[in-house]
Length: 274
Ligand SMILES: C[S@@+](CC[C@H](N)C(=O)[O-])C[C@H]1O[C@@H](n2cnc3c(N)ncnc32)[C@H](O)[C@@H]1O
Image 1 (tube, protein in one colour):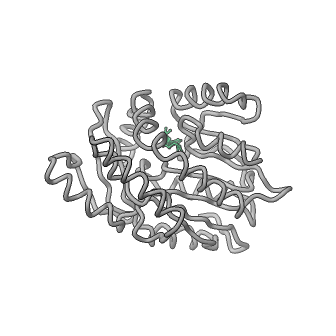
Image 2 (image 1 turned 135 degrees about the horizontal axis):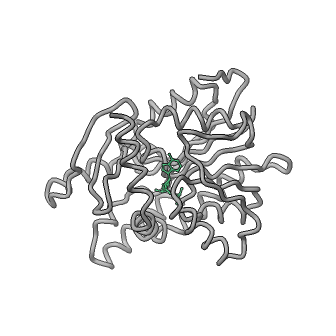
């Protein structure tokens, strides 16, 4: 069953439609917040001699570009050929293609040696992976001692998640399957280009899992407070919600009620292979 679900996801994410939808829906509307988020990440993790980072599940490479522009050496991986094509195109348009190593790789079967990277970034990716523990184990393994793991996921306890459930009920856009699992609420949607898993993560469980793998939790900050703008057609209302997200990020910064949460961990000496 697990293998079937993993194959379904691989198939959906092999299609360009899905990647374009992600860029149009989330990436383009919140550029400023994400630029500020990456400034924060840089401040916390960049040091002069430790800057090799893996962008795990790079998609169209928007975060690869942010990392390169902030002085990191980047290896970008994705298992989707279409994502890699978009990533290379994006890098080329930004005259950065020579700067990054872009490779096809599956987080469920990572070939890199143990302790290859100073840091790993996994932004908006684990939520789409059914075998999340295997992916996390692989990511933890390839980080050097003292290196960082940065994860961005959506929270099952965010205010947005509760509002979203109500809107789903009213607009009848509910997922085709909902399951409560160890790492959160697993929502399966039919995208029109195949099934996709979107996990609303139990952040507490995720944190405990990474900590028990031999990492210290360094801190967290919010990404977008709400993603409700994705359902709003009225442009003025949409702008107001996006403005509120910016305000929340810049001036409020409380993590727990926010839908997107950025978590930073540091590998310690207790790291054991799982
Ligand atoms: C929602 S997109 C996020 C892309 C990028 N991190 C960003 O924030 O724009 C998720 C990406 O993870 C990739 N992905 C999902 N499962 C993966 C896996 N098992 N191995 C490698 N890449 C994977 C998908 O192909 C997709 O490009």
